[in-house]
Image (cartoon, rainbow, N blue to C red; front, side, top):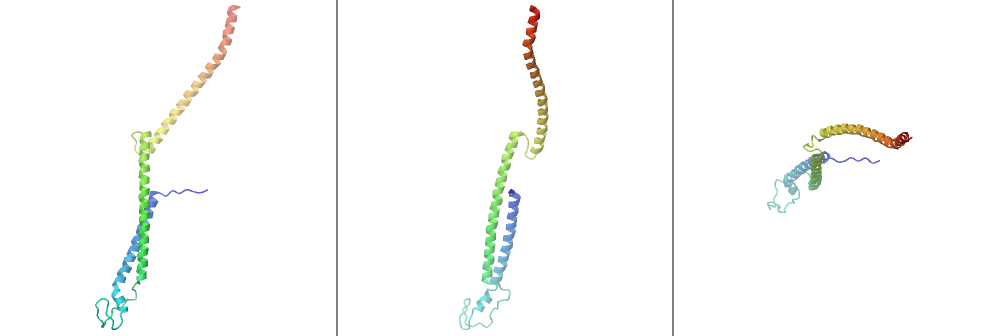
Length: 182
């Protein structure tokens, strides 16, 4: 048998918080890689210079002191992958946010419907007080039901007695008539 496990508002809110944390972490990772990549641009440009060709930044053909790329410099591909991961995480975060928002709407609507039901069934009762008030009313109704059962049993006994008397009456009348006329 399949078990049904409803996804609650709290579950969807937690999924959103988890997605938000993941996208924040991926954004920080992307920002750090991108900054490191940008910081290394001078070294990257210098690595592509050839003696005698003009520099694409300053135009000089003389390059006496070239910038060097550090060993930790991220590649453009690593920055792109980090950016793609961040963007995917943001899509997931937005979807989780939308799901939580939709679920919040469903819960709010259900609460309002329940609040209206409570007011119809238990006037002047708040939603929060409804369970206790309903339990009290149930107890009162059970007591009234028991009293009605006793009344019904009494009436049923009286009806049975009346039926018996109605069946016996013609016989008794016949006996009385015989006694009077004999």
